[in-house]
Length: 112
Image 1 (cartoon, rainbow, N blue to C red):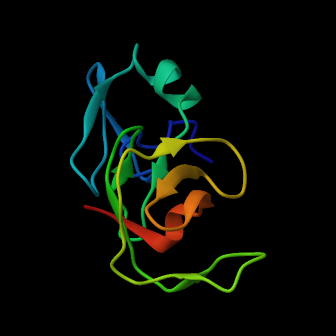
Image 2: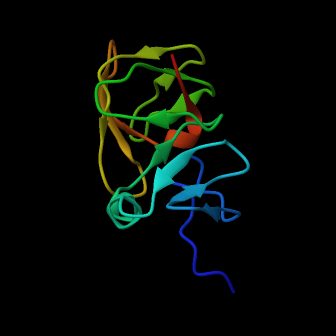
C-alpha cells in the first residue's frame, strides 16, 4: 500500500509525488512535503456538498430538523450565522433565531 498522505483539501487517497511536492489529481491541490505532517493533525469538517467549514461561517439548513425535547422544527432554508466547530457527533454549535442554542451535524447544512 502507498505511504503517501491523503490530500488535506479533499481527503483523496490518490496523491502522488512531484519533486518536492505532493499533488492531488482530484482537486489539483499541491502542498510541500514538509507541510504534510502538520496538515494531517488538522480536523476538516465538510458540509453536505463537500465545502470545508470554519469557525464563524454562515450555513443554511438543507433538511427539516426536529428539535429534541420540543415540538418545534428547524425548517429547510434557515440561515445560521457564526457557527463554531466542535468535536463529537454533532460537530457544529450555533444559535438559531427562535430556537436558541443548538448542535447540528455538518451533513445537514451547506455553506452560505
